[in-house]
Length: 194
Image: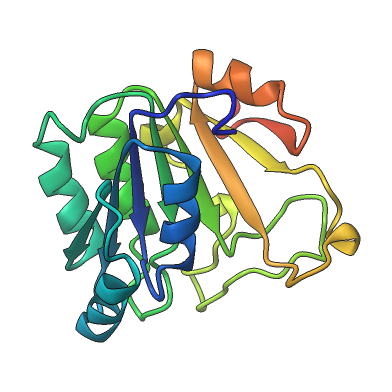
């Protein structure tokens, strides 16, 4: 995806041990923001990310940090890429994160990790109980009507590592049309059928 879209900002929620952050910093020289709620993992990641000048770390609730970034013109450049993985505590911030994102970034791609893949039960996903399962029904809201859905094109049985599901969301227009041309993604249509 980074080969075909020149993202001007990359924002990750859920730094954890900074594995994804390090990977993202190898894909782009654009500014990267990574958000972690745990002070322990924030401190651990700070050591792992030392020397990566384009990476900026933040600590706090991800929707709150996203709101601060949304008020900063240096971060609201587009197109932007979001990697949303801040969902392992009781509070599931995904809907709140996306509410901030759709208001501040008119053109973006957002990948949500640990998500239920429609049409492939072999992928595992996070389910924290009623109203907290990472599946499309959680996101089918009018405020997200401009988003289109993409699934992994490869079946779970082809995955060599953990078969963790994901969904990629893209704003209508250029982002969606570009993602339709990526072989590793399967187009799932608009998030909300109109």
